[in-house]
Image (cartoon, rainbow, N blue to C red; front, side, top):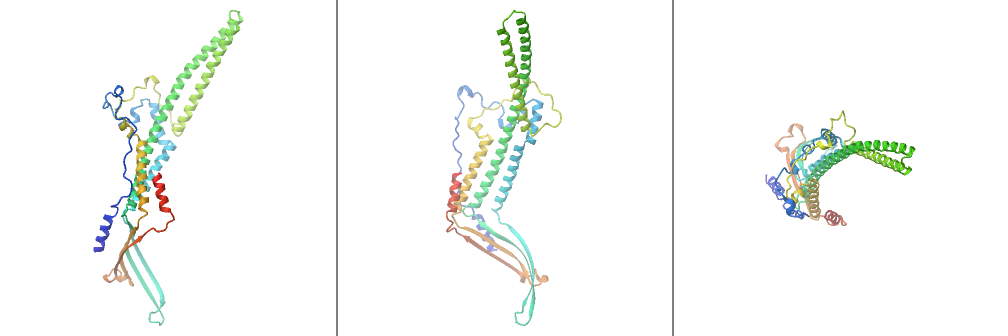
Length: 362
């Protein structure tokens, strides 16, 4: 019992020392407030973090495209998979902060020379037990800092996925409106080409009748060529926008799309709270991800510093052993063992120093 109490006390004391640099948020490169002429009421409207993309867009066709992009975009799928990977790595690293308890059972039958020197003997040995193998007492905070680094990397990955999702919605919407705008411009360009063709026809008849000069006719042809060139450029731009939209949405849309709203009927976005400049900056997921990566880097520095100090581990087990299976769980067969081990780096040829240099540089 005293040994168990000593183990619990050592576990409680472990991790009291933290060698990681203290995390301090860097000064934000923003003004403390908006200029008076732009300030207005900073409390009016909703916060941007409380508004979803469905509240911004009223076009049913655009909503279908954005929904498909968030489900089928390959890069977003990779970002989501990276979250799962980071979550798993954090669980693995965090598990090192607690002892791993395992159970074992053995049975052996041996035959060898008799202890009396006459003939041979056959012996049986059975054992069962539970034990803790090499549980590190985290006096210097190495294991804790590695766990904190893994946690911060996991949180950074979550925010990076959120930032990518927002960027994906933005790209789908901007590409969609570029395609829709090109459609309307193509309609106008088609009408312009038709008008220029009619102008060329009239100019040709006037030239044949001797009413106008060849210069006027050539000018009308030039205007037609310019209109046709602009039309071809608009069609190319729309094709490029449509192709990029297909890439963003992960392929063609399954099933017919709903009818789009005219561009003039898209409506207005919800009113958002201006807030303070610093509040807007720290609400950005890419900024939050960067801060979490900074936390992870500081924790890795603490782990690298702790590697210069002795590592103390505990190993213990208890169980039953007997030469007869019938008497395996008798009082005479009970036993236990407990012992610490210490590992002190002496000559590592600069490995720990190199790890610390890398951690501080990051």
